[in-house]
Length: 258
Ligand code: OOG
Ligand code: MG
Image: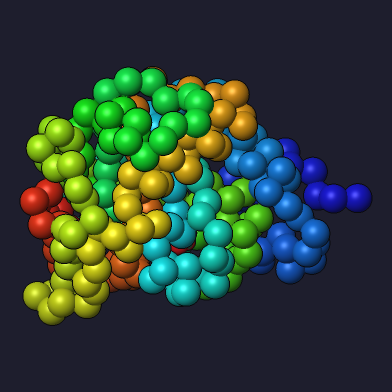
C-alpha cells in the first residue's frame, strides 16, 4: 500500500520541528505520484492552518533551467505560502537556527490585483497582476542533502521556508519582464546571472501554469495574494557571516546578512 499522505505530512512536520532531515519517500516507494504529493502537501497546509498560520499565496519552483538541472527535477512544482514564512531581511541571521540546510534564491514576485482561480492566458496573467517586485526565497529541504524526486519535493511544500519581499512596482509599468537582468552576489562576488526569460520563457507563464493548477483543484487565490514565479538562478547556501545581494534590473535589490 502507498504511504498515507497524512502520515507523510506528519513525518515532514517532525523533520522540520526537530531539524532532522529525512530520506526521500520515493527512495522506498518509487511509485508515489503527483496526486499523492499534493495530498500530502494539503495535509501539511491543513495542520499549519489549524495552528493559526494564514495562507497568503503560492510559489512555483523548478521553473528555470538552472534550478531544474541542479535539483534533477525537470517539472515545475507548486507550493503554498503562509504569513509565518514572511521575514524581514534583518531577521534572517536570527532565524538561521530554525532551518536544516537553508539556501537563498532570487525570485520575481507578483501581487494579484484580481482573483485567479481558473485558466488564464499570458495576456490575462499580466492583467491579473497589480504589483511586481523582487523577492528572496529561503528554501530548506527536509530531505537530506536536497536529494529528492518530484513527488518528494511537492510533498515537502517545494522546500518552502521563508520569503523576503522587496519593494513593489505597478505591473503596468513593466509589461515585459523577460529582458530584466538578475544578479546574485555573495560577499561582493557575483555568483549567478540570468534574465527574466529564464522563468519558463516569461515569468507570466508561471502564473498561467499556476492558474491551471488552481482550476484543477477548485481553488482561487484572492486579490492581494502573493505569487513567487520560481528562482531565476540556482540557490546559494546561507552561511552564517556571509552577505547576499540579490538584484533584478528595474525591480531593485534584497540584501541579507546571514
Ligand atoms: C525545490 C524548490 C524550488 C524554485 O524557485 O525553483 C524553488 C528546491 O530547490 O529545493 O523554490
Ligand atoms: Mg523558489
